[in-house]
Amino acid sequence: MVLKSRECILCRSLRQKNNQGLLVKGNYICPECEARIIALTREDPDYDYYKWGLKKIWYCPGA
Ligand SMILES: [Zn+2]
Image (cartoon, rainbow, N blue to C red; front, side):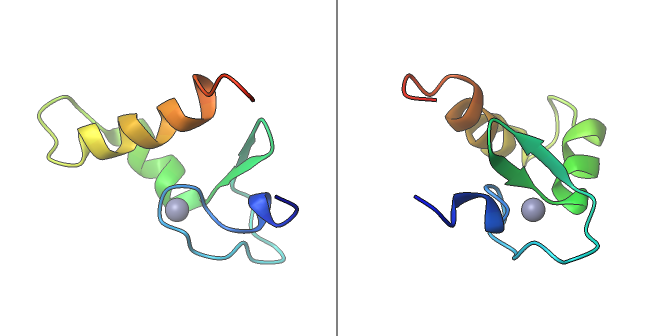
């Protein structure tokens, strides 16, 4: 998909022009989600969701 990296893979917010964010294997992660991931703990209710989102990037066989 050509537009793959234009929206955050986790929250699907569109990448802004001056948005720093993170690019992992062509997948965009917005600064908000990046900060979220960094701050995540196992007790966090969102932990599984973000873990799942990152798995899509890092463990995707086709990536
Ligand atoms: Zn995001």
